[in-house]
Length: 306
Image: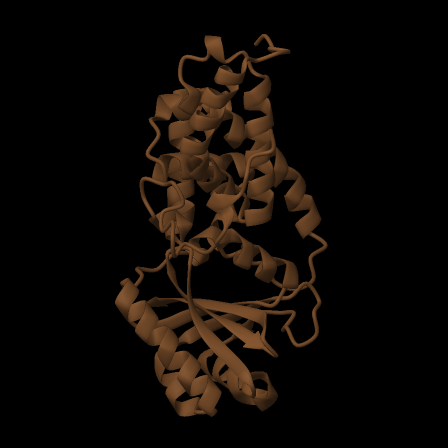
């Protein structure tokens, strides 16, 4: 495409208007592909820079152009991020995003935003993840996805089908939001009171606890498996809960808690549950991810760099 060297002021105003309208969707695509709010913001900003430089008079569909640009940028970042995460110390979890003001993060369907599913999506390669996200979260036609990814329609159908089957083996039927919040509150209350029996009552026998700290002191570096071990871990260090302020938050369309120590946010926690109880606890201790969560609440108010 040709590049404009001196866009008119009105033309640039139109470009800003179009981009601002589409920005939630672009962030939603990038975030689901990357599992990182900070990296998704970088991708969206790069998409904006390219949108500024593009000869927009020849762009038939700004939404298609920007979605395609964002998807390809996100795949490139995901490929390099995969290498970086090989040196991550302990379990890696996605960065949670505050969805209290933007529950869908630009998506047609919210299911592909849940924290536990984003973690499972990491098992797919970046192209598979992008195809699945575009189809399942944003309801793009297979032909549109094929054009974005530079693949045949038949190939895209196979990729999405394979991704669905792969994810189905790792996903359980989840409870609704009310039950999810009730189980989360029950877990936090029992953990703070050191009530192991009540903790075991809300956990499934195969419950697992994952702690993302990248080597930070106090974060388990391996998954903790089994109802008894998870319950004991949650109550083993009484100092962990002492003096902690627990605040309810909404992250990735589900309930979570943010723990404040000495007035500072220190730990994020959410969980996945089925009718049988809580089967997965996810703790984020990594300070950069906590900061990203706090920052994500202001995402839509951030100015564009023109």
